[in-house]
Image 1 (cartoon, rainbow, N blue to C red):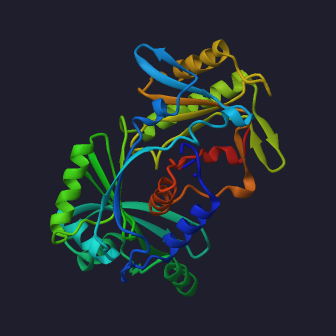
Image 2: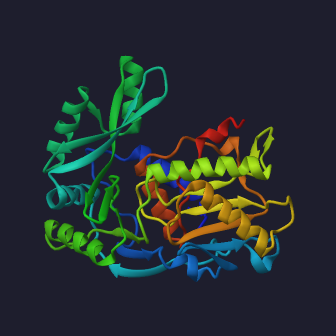
Length: 360
């Protein structure tokens, strides 16, 4: 659901979704781009975007931006490039990256699967398995599930329809090594997140060694802290309460507007910072500093915690249209969307509250 910071082009989403359903566990996808390792520093983004002001809450810094409809002040986060460093990498097939991933970071990894149901719908599972190679990985996942593993989404869909039984396919692998999290979605690009750039590069070096001295393409995202599902839930509850206090929510025939959105990079459990989108508290009038600061402080009070830095953005319109809603993307889709948007110096908004489909 990444706008830099908040750009998510429809074409990026479409391309990512196509890749997420087309990847084949039994085949190697070739890189379709110039291979590189790109390190993005999201810690520096809030300051680089030149906030209108910074609110200090007991030593915690919230960078506040007021987005106007005028060309002179349109979404500073959107138009600010993430600080990036680019390094060369080796052209590798996804199967080669998979083997290097397991050799360097295995045998114990987390495997994400989707289980498609014959009557429609799906179930997501994260399995702790042990594997030293692709063949062992398939066997371990099938043993844990108790059903055969399809090669990709399309095959799983056909199998579920033909057999009238659930069918599963592998979506991603994740390994947490200290302060580094490495994700592999069966594309030729690794996603590496950390709050420590040196440690992230050390893990990449281990994977390079396992790949025989070849450096796999990777996006390395460095942030100030790790987010969590528990924190996101607290922020969501604070957003719901604040919406009621502000009275900004309006239910429309095709969606809802005036909501407070809690946004994270990737998904809860990935790196920060947190981004909070507020509607104008006074309708169509941009808030002055005193009003904006009051709203931000009240939000932090309701949440009961603050992580430094956080970014707060006041926008003329917030919300969404139902026609564009889809379930939260799989980690594979999230990773690909993140990569596509990051290449355009963007940060993905991949957490959107689904409770908003049927607002009260």
